[in-house]
Length: 333
Image 1: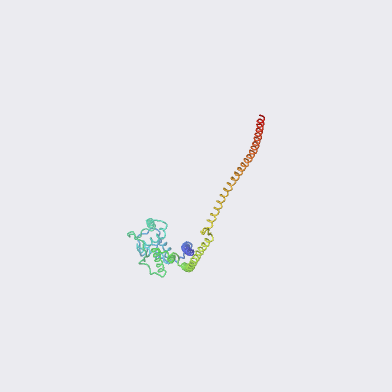
Image 2 (image 1 turned 90 degrees about the vertical axis):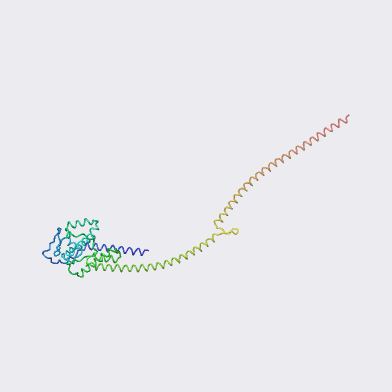
């Protein structure tokens, strides 16, 4: 449905906006660095590989400064160093977090990452065996009591781990994950944006529900109209059939069939008439010819009869002449 497609598009836009705001905030906003607390003069900022760890004075190196800048801006370098180098587990957890959030996304193998860490910062726990990535953030024994901000950061970290483990892709889970990726002063803005998004989604869901109800009602209306249209089509088809039928000798047939039969009869009768007329003309000509012959024969017969009559009369006169001559000869004797 169009409304469902619109809702899906809005969700995609909201997710893209979340990631864009997070990336832009991390890239463009200049971090507000709290004033650094005074550090003991015995602390040495060394960027060379460190040797065995002194838990009373853990080294403050580039690793400590990077971790503090990325995750613990409310702490001092000494506190972050104490957290990192409290135990092999805390040190390995820090490396796991850095690798999973940065180097793993770049496709760098873990072995190469570990070797680079040893080359840069040395091996602070050479006798400790590497352990699996931890799912909770350890607290060093020498760490001071957690402040409300630290507790909130810990809860956010737990929320991150929980979201990543469960692979929850819901909007609320993404919102909670996004809160952990921005600075504290940005969270109210993200919260207001999330509230506006939820209000918009609720309005869209309500509009979608109303549209679904209206669509269901319209579907029923369409079904009833289709039923009426089918009935009207059937009636119209029956009327057209009756209109197109013609009864011939009590046999109903379509107009096309009737026209075909009639035209066929006309053609047949026309052919018969042509044949009859042709034959009548031939017979008339033959009769005229025979009549002419008869008249000629009759005329010839009349002429012959006249000639025969004249010849007979001539022969009769000659016979009478001869008889008279014979009588004359017999009378003289």
